[in-house]
Amino acid sequence: MARSFASGTWAVILGGSSGFGLATAHRLAEAGMDLCLVHRDRRAALAKIEPELEKLRGSGVRVLTHNADALSAEKRGAVLGDLAEALGEDGRVRLLLHSIAFGHLKLLAPERPRPRSGAQAEEPHEALARRLGVDAAALRGAADALFAEGVDGLEGLASPPAHPSRSYLDADDVARTIHCMGTSLLDWTQDLLARGMFADDARVLGLTSEGNAVAWKGYAAVSAAKLALEGVARSIAVELAPHGIRCNVLQPGVTETPALAAIPGSGHLKAQARRRNPFGRLTTPRDVANVIHLLCLDEAAWINGEVIRVDGGEHVSGATG
Image (cartoon, rainbow, N blue to C red):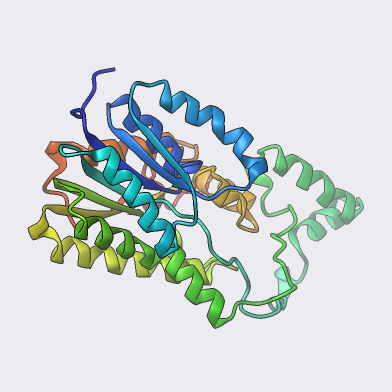
């Protein structure tokens, strides 16, 4: 594969050990971009991550890795100090990708069933079991098993998502989530700029989701963080344009990542996405990494201040089958 970037062109990827961050690292390594990956993983997880890092190191680009808290000012300083040494006189950061996925997924209050009346008085599996003369619990168990195997059409008969009920969202949860997944983009952007490490034509990218406009149960804090990220990104796009920085936010469709797996009811989100998507499949991390690669090219220099959907048309499709 032809290399798109000259030697000494770097990407800083926050959250670079899995999901979108890791997929982007592989795509940019193929294109010849050097990598500084910041991630935070426990020792047990590192055994799975290390083979991926070895693949990156074997691709012919320089790879710096830091298993550190990207939200710590002290750790950020240490990472950038190490990176400055690697950059030398000629290297510069072409891309800063914010792919941190850590936030509180809690309900606002204890769940209460919605009122039902008429034909909706029964759950779908109960109504079907009564019509067929079978046990409702057995029917739901069969539906759950098939739904877990990927039979998306059984979503209405399967058990609803189970949300933790031990604690509920509070102000501290919201504030921490907004900083982790939203405003920390500004910390890294400002520090890279102050140290003169950005290229003359740099790209700053963040990741949002459909939860920026749609309310999913347990997603309130992350939704607020995504909106904060988008607001910060717009300001970066305007105020830092004279410094040569373009800033955009990508909105992938529902994608199989560790972050998605952490959301209660992720199976239902995946089923809905596959049924809505014109191509009948989920977005992949590679789909998103390919677009990030495109946005790093010289030809994408006039794209700035946008929220770019990367979902195969999922967001415009009203179809569910």
